[in-house]
Amino acid sequence: MSSQSVLQGRDLKKSFGPTAALAGVDIAIHRGEALAIMGPSGSGKSTLLHCLAGIMKPDSGEVHLLGERIDDLGERKRSALRRTRFGFVFQFGQLLPELPADENVALPLMLGGVPRARAVQQARTWFGPLGLAGMEGRRPGELSGGQAQRVAIARALVTRPAVVFADEPTGALDQATGHATMRLLVEATKHNDASLVVVTHDTQVADACDRVVEVRDGRLLTQGQPGPYAAAPHLPGQPVPGRGGAR
Image 1 (tube, rainbow, N blue to C red):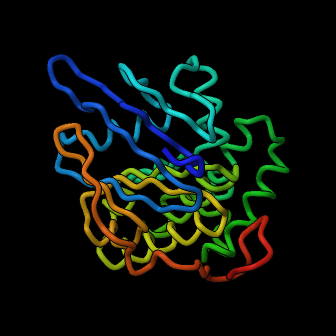
Image 2: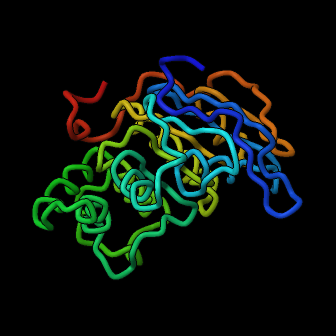
């Protein structure tokens, strides 16, 4: 494994009863890399994401974040890690319907102890760069599918995580909206020096990433070349918070 890796999985094994979901997987994700994990249903790709993200413990093997082992941490420490060092984008966004968009984005900050007013102020700085200016007060039911996923992207990035995990992030969107959303997700994570790990069955989603790996029967097969959008990011609107400007 390279010393430049942000996240590493070493000989990961995980079984559910007699079924081996992971059968000894070695994987490394580099800083600023967008990695797509593909494979048929039941291949183990979501299990791999869950083990790398600290959601699930592997039966054996190790997971290292920035050189520190994390798979052997207790649930409380892994939960804190998921709030601060990792970001998540899910297929259906999983926004809280009773909260306005800015509070949905601010939620990870508030859970980490940031006062509400300051958290919401910080969350609002993400709306312009992601093409959401003026939508801060809208609730999820007042947003289109693509807009809701952009709010979810802002929520995933607001804590400045080292790695963003996305599980079928365009699965609930039409093709055109999904294509645009995926491009924005890749650009936004790269712009913030974060790495991106995407689980998908969609080849167009995978094409937006720098590298594609395939999981079959719990084993990893490496394949693919950088997709057409694996290039220097350029975001719409204002500069992304914390950076000097769109590149």
